[in-house]
Image 1 (cartoon, rainbow, N blue to C red):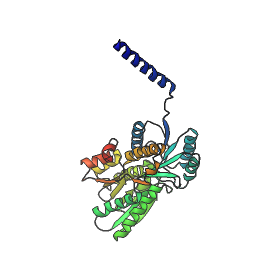
Image 2 (tube, rainbow, N blue to C red):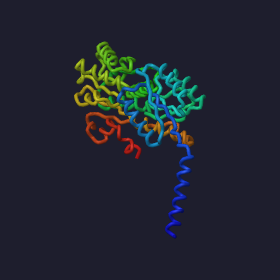
Image 3 (cartoon, rainbow, N blue to C red):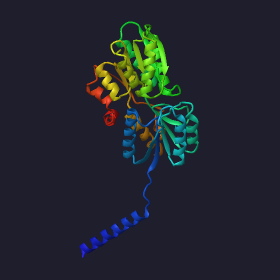
Image 4 (cartoon, helix red, strand yellow):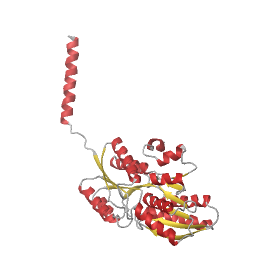
Length: 327
């Protein structure tokens, strides 16, 4: 009899639990849109890997989009509007143009969407947090790499990209100030090119042919660094030109080994993606007051001396390094 009573109690409890489960609606996943400057560079592929990891961890519905070229701010603006129409609650955004993307971001915020900025800032007061490189400091780091490794006067060629992009302009400003402070360096020439490796190669070749005095070359993102490295290799000037580039790419990593690249300023795009989506979750969870206005994801110089060290390899191949980085 006692056994039958226990079985009856358990049956009643199970029936109650099943009934509650049937009446309860499944919790909807919160929606986050990641909109970047492009979708095909190794830099942004690493951003996507970090973003997807965070979306999985926090059970978020994540959409990823970006234009075909890093000059197409108009398509980015359309993607922002589409994300709002599709019900995104937070937009994680890397701006092509600091000023021209701002009205679209403002409009999204007015529609109730929260904004997280990563990689490249946007001129909007609606951004909850910026996550990325201290670009001014990274530019100084590139200049310092050359100043410490090249003796005598430095005649510097600058290969930069879109004039409206905040991170590129900050990197140039940091490099220019560090070079001027040294007293032995000057910028001989500067070219603004497309964010496209073949075009950057063509423009860099033209720059070097027009200014044979250049003995230091600086390129400020992944595609321009790839193009600059290929230009130095094509002109057979690896022994005459010190090239400081940005980011991790198979071409520039090979360049470190064959001599056409001398230093890479390596960012942490995986952390940008992860922390960007994690910040979106915190905003949705009502934890936005705890977000820092600016989060520096750090940079590291990789050259031939530390290329094969553990730290150098982690910097260059950071896809799965976030957990150790965060600690």
